[in-house]
Image (cartoon, rainbow, N blue to C red; front, side, top):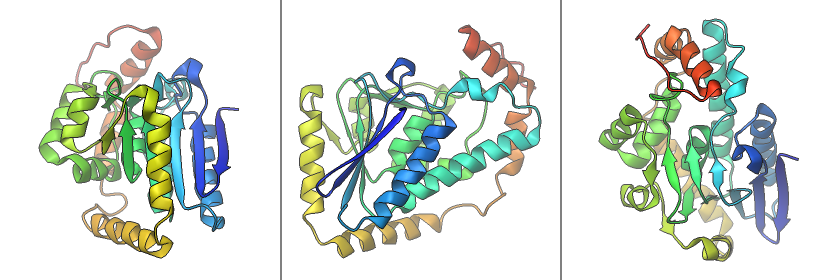
Length: 258
């Protein structure tokens, strides 16, 4: 099983369980995340949701790049970003507070999942980033850009995406990506304690606070489709095909800007 869903009193825990691939996300794993959100919203006993990665070396290292090999035309890239947006939107709209428990790398889609959660608790060894400018040559959707800007501000987002670097946990904490930094040996206890503290509070206040902030942030987003030209430009490029091929071959890509 590449995902494990379990409950512990008022807490629901979803574990991304593919440690041999650093928990890289398949579409089945993304759909399991949507299903977990649905289950949580149907269960009044659940008050807080925890997302975590198995193995201790990665939260989620991104989307499984092998899934990009069959991309052929403009619709493939648009459909991928729309599909990912649907998953992240469902996570954003789950009515219970969400906590990302980050150990190791949270990259690409994994970084997007962590940043869509309400809170992030990480270890000092953790790293965050979306290194598409130096790996695949693709483009995030407007919604994903918006979430990044909401958390970090435009200057920090440009630094992150232009360089393609992975940000160390201490810097991520200073930027506001991480709410709390705790030693790896203590993270299970720290996240459980934080989740339990939140779960003891008034559930309607938690729900209203979360939804109120989501609505405020949503006012700043582009309408559906207003990002299509930029997404299409990247996903239909020779550079994107080169990025996927070189990533799977474990070599450095050669960019041409075409």
